[in-house]
Amino acid sequence: MTVALLVMLLLAAIGAALVVVTTTETLISASYRSAQEAAHGAEGAVERALHDLSTTPDWSLVLAVPPANLVSTFDDRTSMPRGPDGRRLDLAALTVERQRDSDVRAGPSGFGADSPQWRLYAHAPIEELLPSAAIVLPVYLIVWVADEGLDGDGNPAIDSNGTILVHAEAFGTGGTRRAVQASIRRSAEGVTRVVSWHRVP
Image (cartoon, rainbow, N blue to C red; front, side, top):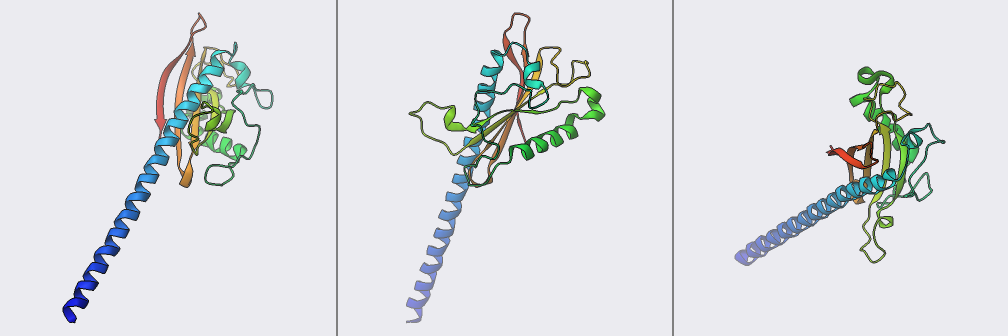
């Protein structure tokens, strides 16, 4: 009787351990998948912004002080969209956050009057980027643009050297958030090229 009880307890412990391991592995897998979806979403948002910016004749139009600034056609026309996990995304507050983070890295202390001033440029769910037959991913995308601060004109609302910054963030499920930033340049012939591209930690 005692042996049978011990065997039952051992089997129960093994079963419980298997449940914990399986649950943990499932959560890790879901978290990784969500992070990858968000990372690729941020990259897709930059690509879409590049498409719109390449057709904009003067980038000063997108750098103008809001509400005079030109925005992308990638726009769901809401200021408080709901993210994939149900939380509200306050675009105004996120823009303030983007500016605050930028000021720490490349603010007035380093660039003076030329320090980048970020403008909300695009925002919509990722499905607006995808073909209608594609699988819908739970990702919301936001893009900001700014003068890159090296043109020396003392005015972050004017592009004087054909180079600007594009910063895209993707919000996924479970609080997932990934960002990509690119520097883009327009040549004298009007060709837009990516100068630098990196994921933001």
